Amino acid sequence: MTLFDELLTLTRAIRAGFELRVKKLGLTYARARLLTTIGRNPGASQAELASALEIETPTLKRLLDALEAQGLAERRPLAGDARKHAVFLTDTTRIEPLLRFRGEVDAALVEGVSAEDLAAARRVLTQMTRNAERLRRE
Image (tube, rainbow, N blue to C red):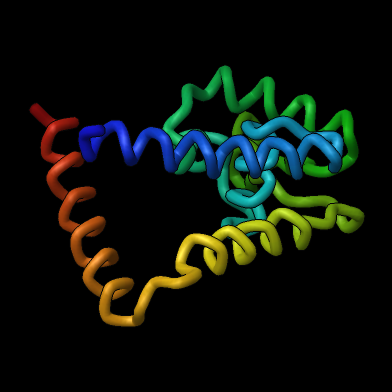
């Protein structure tokens, strides 16, 4: 199996585990990603969130509509431009289960990996990310 295939397999396994957990919370993978992004960027504009998630603004709008219908997020007009909105989690939103799962995945992924191997893996993955970013610009 090539390194590319190994990385795809790893990514699919992580995503499948995440999807199982968010489904129990009444969310989809995309909505859960948006919730955690809003949680890390409260008050971000819709355009900023779309950029952070690398999705189109109309896609983000549909996801936000669904989160608002669930009572998990809200849009508030931005001061000075009522056409643009800042996005916030509602007071009732609990993203801790999503964040806890991320911590569980981190712990599970490094189980049995020595500190020096983990440091090397991080260096390699960081370099591979830089290389992949160059591919996106070509």
